[in-house]
Image (cartoon, rainbow, N blue to C red; front, side):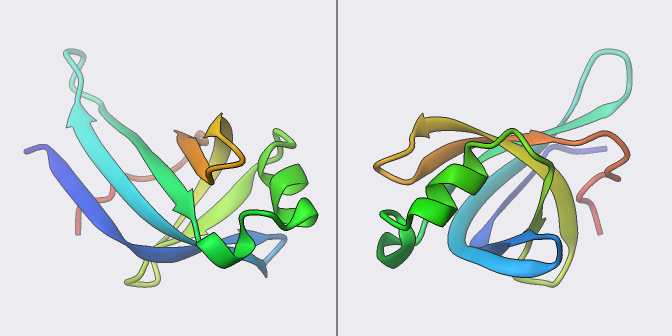
Length: 101
């Protein structure tokens, strides 16, 4: 399987409800054991970066849903890179299938 990179505009959902709009960059890479790993980053929309609910929820350590622009969804955790600047690293939850179509 080839490495795949996806970029686009999506949204983060918390319990199925819109939390914030984001731009994402995901990369699926085959590791030496033959399994695929998904990694990436999001950038929260400028209009939502200072929203306390958004900041608290993204930094909560709870499993959230990243909805891609083609309606696919990934269950993910977010680790802040620069929370005030709206930048977070994506940690994909277990049980997600590869992003390949």
